[in-house]
Every structure is written in C-alpha cells, then in structure tokens.
Image (cartoon, rainbow, N blue to C red; front, side, top):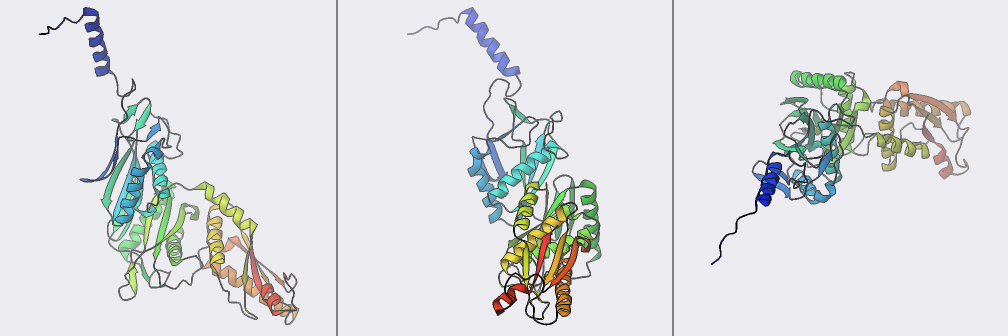
Length: 403
C-alpha cells in the first residue's frame, strides 16, 4: 500500500503561479495552440483542419495559407458544385490595427486576398463577395491573427443582385434580357431595374470600387461581336449602361463563363453576375506589352470595307478595349491600306473608309471616339508584293497601333 507524500511548499507555490499566469494571460501571449479552421454552410461542413492560416497584425496578405490548400480547394469545389450559392468573405480586424492593404479598411484587404487565392483554385469569381468589419474578439496568437475571415454562405437571389460585402446591397426581381446569339440587351428596361442600375452607378462613383461583370454564354450561339466570346460581349454591353451614367470605364472589368442557358421564346435573363474587388494593376502592364509587340492587322476583300475576325484578332481587340479603359491618356490609330488595283485617289479614299469602318466598329463596342485616330496610306505602304493575289490580300488591311 502506497501513501501520498506531501507536495513540497516551493513546488506548490510554483504550480499555483504557473496556473495563475495561464489563466489570466491573454490568448497567444505565451505560445498557445494554433486555432483550428472550420468552414461550414449552415450545418454542412465544407472544410475543417487542425492547421490554419493567419495574418500578421496590420497585414492583409494571408500567411501559411498553402498549409490548408486542401481545405481551400474544397471551398472552390463546393461553389462550383452549387452555382446557386454565394460566399461572402468578411475580413475581420481590430480597431487598433494598422492598415497596409490599400483598401478603405484592413478587413476588405484581407477578404480580397483570400478571394484571389480561391479564384486561383478555380472558384467562380461571380460567387465570391467581400466585406470587412471590426471584430473585438479576434483570435490573436503569437502576434498573429487567426480566423480573421468569416465564411458566410447564402443563396443567390433571383433577378439582378449587386452586393459589396457589408458596404452595399441592391437586388431587384427583374434583370437584363438577351436574345439567343445576341449581345445587346433588350430595351426598354423596366422602371425598377433602371432605378437599381442608377443607384449602383452612384455607389460606384462615390466609392471608387472596382466591379467585374461576368457575362454568360453557351455552345451553339453565334458570336458576331468583337470579343472572344458572347459572354464578354454581353458583359461589355451591360458595362455601357454604367459608363453612360458616368461610371469610369477603369472601374468596370469584364469576364465570361460558359453555362447551360434556357432561352424561353428565344430570350433569357440572368446572363451576368457582378462582383466587387480591387483592380489588378499588373494586368495593364502585361496587356500593354502584348499590344505594342504585335500591332493588329485586319484584312478585307477586294473593294470591300467588311472585315473578318479570327480568334487571335478577337483576343487583341479584347485586350485593346481593356487597355484603353485603364491607361490614362491612351489612344490608338486606325490606318487604312489597299493593294494597287485601281486609281491611287480611289484607293486612298477606300483605305480611309476601311479605317473609319474599324473606328465605328470599335465605337459600337464602347470605346470612346476621342481615343481613336484615323489615317489612310492607300496603296503607298504595302507589306507584300502586289504582283500576286496572296500579296495583294495582305496589303488590303487596316493596322491598329497604340500611340
């Protein structure tokens, strides 16, 4: 039989002191355990892990997020499998944290960074919304902010919806309507939809926030627009509704997504969604470098001012519209050329007509007329021999260059 020995007085005092320190110390001051990650849609667990990512105090960049990449991928896959769901990423921050994000508050910066990470994993951008708010109970461990993102799933509303986190929310039961293979929405718009568009335009102008318009299209539709696909063309047409109300073009980005669409009596609504975030400034430099390296050549049939577009030319024009929207002081020159068949004066006029045709074509795709200059070289600047039909075909062209 064993008897308990009394605990020495000094050891007892040490145990009581350590217990008191652990009890009264703030979370994380002494190397506490990392808080776990839990992401759920109501009662349904989307992802969970004993690991977690974090933010430095005052920082917007998620740190160690690759350690839970598998859980982030589950979120992206869940959204793809549930197109009727939105996920609002609300960034949380303490009121006394510094803000290095470039956003109006640190929470928005944190939410936007996680949103970009999820998009990189294939999450649909249109289903990812962002917000930011002060949260006094933020979990700080070893001077690192854990669980500084709240994951708020919701059903996507019917009709048109504009949601910028906690900052702005407008919904209306009506929406833009498009015909099959059409990229211009039907008019007139209903009074309520017009009011919703006007209110959202005012929000964009006052907040300076960036909005991406994602247009939808499906296989089997004919694309007669300037863009690579009909979704981009539809998004661009909606964009014009906002620029006509004074929203700067540089605040409006375009995206597209292929989806199954039901055209009741040849018309469908809900062919675009809207997400708010920060401008990707790196993209502008990449686009400008591509445009300068390879000026666009558009070719015409003999005596014709009608142009034919292939996929590479559509991509160039898509990049060109983005460049002109976002580059301060930017402009282009549309220069017409012909072969040497016919009189020089007639060819000079035809070349200018072709250059003007391209200018009007770009104007019809929401490019400001003031950004497009027109020139005519007629037959004077061939790029190939006029002695063959193949050479003459290469000379019947309009070249678009950025200035």
